[in-house]
Amino acid sequence: MTMRRLVAGTAATAIVGTLALSRMTVEAATAQANLTVQASVTANCDVEAPNTLDFGDYDPVVTHASANLDASTTIRVRCTRGSSNVWVGLDSGSNASSSQRRLAGGGSEFMDYDLYSDAARTTAWGNAQASGVDYSPASSGWENLTVYGRVPSGQDVAVGSYTDTVVATINF
Image (cartoon, rainbow, N blue to C red):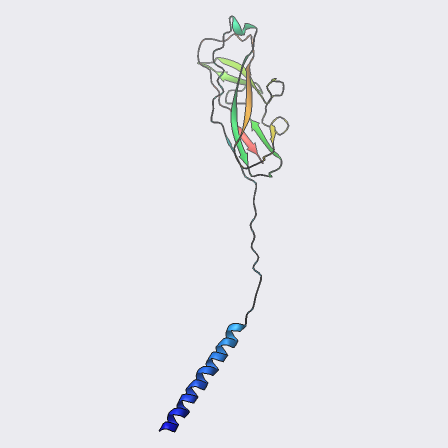
């Protein structure tokens, strides 16, 4: 009986040793492959007009009979950094007559005004690439663009409130 136990124990040890050796051989083998990972960034832009361009009071009799009424405001734009050929346009407004922007009062009253991209008010801000404002985004954060407005002097307009709505468009 002692002999059998010894033989049985030796056989069991040999089987476990063989399994351990086989397992080590399997675990030691490896294979590798490269996984390509990619993403693309597309140009995207946004525009907001959070403020009103408020000219305040226009006095056609004394003050503005010979002096323009000027005001300014800002619009906010943002684009993906590195976007190219970006420009911002301002349309002619809801009450335009031909290319002249107009504020509408009660009834059939209108008051002319113009929008510019420069403080000297020499460069009209239009809604075509040639008359819009070029924009080169340095970051994807919001940036302010100033809109300069002018109500020309010498307009014979009636008492009342005058308004217009201009659409700002960012093109990219």
